[in-house]
Amino acid sequence: MKIKRQKQAKKTLSFYKYNFNFREPHQILIDGTFCQAALKNKIQIKEQMPKYLMGEVQLCTTNCALKELETLGKELYGAKLILQRYQVRKCQHFKNPVPASECLLSMLEDKNPHHYFVATQDFTLTTGLKKIPGVPLLYIVLNTIVLDKPSQPSLDHVQAVQLGQLVSPAQQQSLHSLKEEQGISQKDGERRGKKRKRKQHNPNPLSCLKKKKKSGPTPPRKISQEGKKRTRSRHKKRRTQGEHDGSAALIQNP
Image 1 (tube, rainbow, N blue to C red):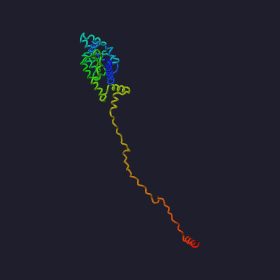
Image 2: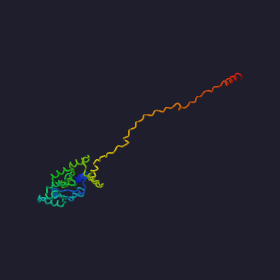
Image 3: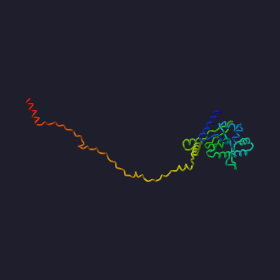
Image 4: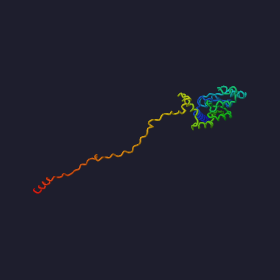
C-alpha cells in the first residue's frame, strides 16, 4: 500500500511540475488543523514531508493561523508549538487578523503564483482551494500524509492550454526569460505589433507606357522566278545540210 501511495504522489507531482511550473524546494502552507492531526497521529511533519514529496520542502504558515490557535485555548497548545517552528509568511491581515482559512485563500490569489502547497484538515478551506487551478492539497488519513489528486479546475486548465486557448505558467516563464535575454521590452513589442502605414510613391514610368500591338504571323516569303534554279535544257544538235548530204553519198557509194 505504501508503494502504491508513493507512485500516486510521484504522478501528481509530475503533473504540477510540467503543467504549473512547480520546482524545489516546495513551499507548503500549513494551518493549525493539520498540526493538530499530526500531533494526534504521532506524525513528524518536518521529517516525513520531504520523504513523501521526494525533495526539499519549506514549511511555512501565516500570522493569522498562529493568532487563530491562540484564541482557541489550551486544547491546541501543542499544535501551536509545532506551527511556531515554521517560517511566517507576510499576509495582508497583519493589523487585523482573519480566520486561517480566509487568510490562506488570499495568499493563493486566483492562480497560485507563488506555487504553494496547502496542508490542512479544514473541509471548508479545501472546498475553496479546489476551485483554484494549480493548488496541491495535503491532508492526513489513517496516520499517513496524502497528496490529493488534481482537482477538476486544474485538469480543465491544462486541457485549455493544450488546445491553445490559454498559455501555461511554464510557457509564460520561458517567454519572459527569452525576452530578457534578447533585451526586448513590452513597449518594443507593442510598437512592433502596430501596423505600419505604407508610404505613397509615384507610379513607375515604365508602367505608364502604351502597350505595343502584337504583330500577326509573318507570311512566308515568295521565291521569285529568277531565284529558282535554272533547269538546263538539253537539245539535240541539228546537223547541217552539207553533213546530211555527205553521209548519204557515203551510204550509196561504199
